[in-house]
Image: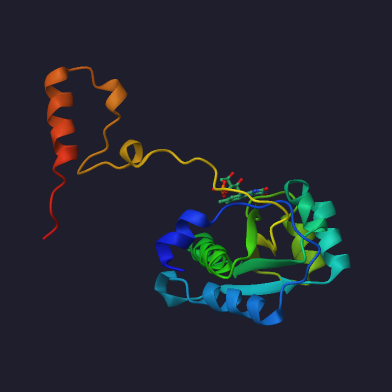
Length: 190
Ligand SMILES: Cc1cc2nc3c(=O)[nH]c(=O)nc-3n(C[C@H](O)[C@H](O)[C@H](O)COP(=O)(O)O)c2cc1C
């Protein structure tokens, strides 16, 4: 699969088949995670791959927005040492995991970790040493039903050339004409 295909196909899945994910696939996902960019090349991440049914069930109890972990065959928990860019680094690693899983035909869902009330419980349950932050949990499995990516805002709406312009609040037709012309002729990058 090409990278752009994986980006388009990736979507959050919350229903999984009762079917294990091969160990080699889970290892490949962590391998993709550890290849993410990292500020100052610190690589503060650690990945805990949870496949034990009882631990997945316990996570599902703690995490109200991740109750579907009780059906998922695996979960990759991303934790980072509490360094300056832990959240950016851990999030980059998480996205790598999601895209790599899509490439392998696996279904995933990013479950929030950072800033959540249940983070201390999750860290304790998994014996994570002090000094680590819970960034995310990625449910991994085989899709229980066909799904699709949540509808995204249009490219035209989110892409701004040279300055941020909320088109709806600019009423002057002379200005909107100029800005629209800008859109049709994006600058070439030297
Ligand atoms: C930081 C972050 C936290 C998220 N936390 C949860 C969560 O706790 N439970 C959940 O079901 N989905 C969670 N999601 C998934 C989003 O709900 C999902 O990405 C969004 O609805 C868009 O759908 P899509 O992933 O299919 O494009 C989270 C996504 C991100 C990026």
